Image 1 (cartoon, rainbow, N blue to C red):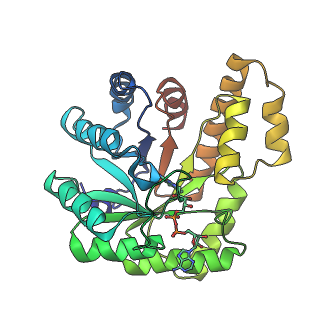
Image 2 (cartoon, rainbow, N blue to C red; image 1 turned 90 degrees about the vertical axis):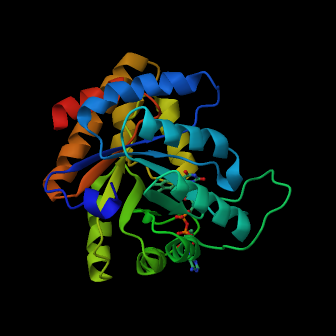
Length: 283
Ligand code: FAD
């Protein structure tokens, strides 16, 4: 089903994100977890993509299996950084030929080790425009409630987000955040900028203190002092921090749903148990 249809739903749309595991054998493990998560009727499962094409084959295999094995709509992520126009066109043609209907169009970050870096596409809005001109895929894009790391001004970042919407994006998925206030302020700014497509917050269930620091360091999301204090109490106690992370994600999701969002996008980290605990409480 296409994104536009999916987000016509009156009830909140549940979606999951997974990534290509490093080990080949873990793809089967990933599908065991996804089979468990299937009971929540996810509208789609998105699959990340290594910028520059590093995980392309595994991402494509997972996308195909989500469709054929689970009967769930897949949404491949795709980055344009360092890729040539021909490569991108070929990827898009193959994706459509496989019957994939949606794509998350991203710029990505330039990989540190790459032989040749093409400059055919500089920003994601150019990729959105290209996908729109070459295919009938429905297009999602990324957004950053706390502002993208390369951009010092949220209003400029929103102007750039608007370029992606004007180029043909149908849905926005956000970076993870730990303070709903950032998201609410962002929604206010989007309304003022007349961005009217569905905005779906990304929720990361915390399952370890080191993981929290690593992931927020990578994506630039802030950990407010009170959130840090909340989790740092359980630093070395895996079971307690997982429990605290579950409780935190339940509260965060309930508050977001009360605000009236169109859906929740869970960063599953390729696991199911914690997501089950959260959704059993939230839905
Ligand atoms: P853009 O929208 O191009 O924005 C990048 C920066 O450039 C911003 O600072 C923006 O303000 C600025 N900018 C945008 N357009 C213009 C313009 N026309 N002129 C001047 N400045 C401009 N990365 C991966 O490698 N693989 C993934 O699978 C992946 N999945 C993601 C999923 C989600 C939901 C999110 C939120 C991020 C994901 N990322 C992924 C990370 C993403 O690739 C990085 O955050 C990247 O730095 C920006 O990508 P973008 O598509 O948001 O870029």
